[in-house]
Length: 247
Image 1 (tube, rainbow, N blue to C red):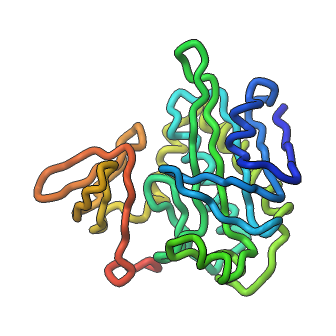
Image 2 (cartoon, helix red, strand yellow; image 1 turned 135 degrees about the horizontal axis):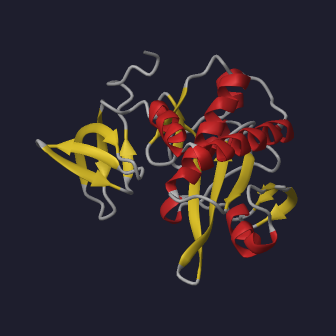
């Protein structure tokens, strides 16, 4: 049976989960009221207010494809948002962000724990802006929103985390039997497929092209200058003026 470990303060829920994964049951979650050194991709910091936002990490010990950890967590987050805030229209921005229009609402970071040359556990951390105000959001270094800034309503963070935990574990169970169904839903929420975007590769090169599809291992199929490329990592930039996010 999975456990939900709710911490008052921690440097990073992902770091804590990695350090204690052996003693935590499969499907468990570590969440924190205060996170002092939250991490995003490529060394970025995740800013969140004390008790204002969701900071949590899920442990998956039975995934054959590690990218599915982010898919499961992201699907659950979007379904939570659709239930609690039906007036907004969230979507995945590949590889691991949740956006509303051209604003970032949540981000995920998946990390593998290796033992004896094999993946023993995949940990997916999620940070979601819930009750943060404009001052905190402006310090993120990119256009960002919170549920509060979108709806002008305050939310019970503990309630949202508990609901998220239940949805994540439901999809984790489904994924172990029908991973293709989880992949299909994750692909469905990747609303940028078919649109023109900009991609910055790990070397910092920026390319414009069309997001054609996602491969079975989660990589982006990107077409530029008539050539298709596969990206397993990189940053996607979207043009707020060129996309109809409410179509």
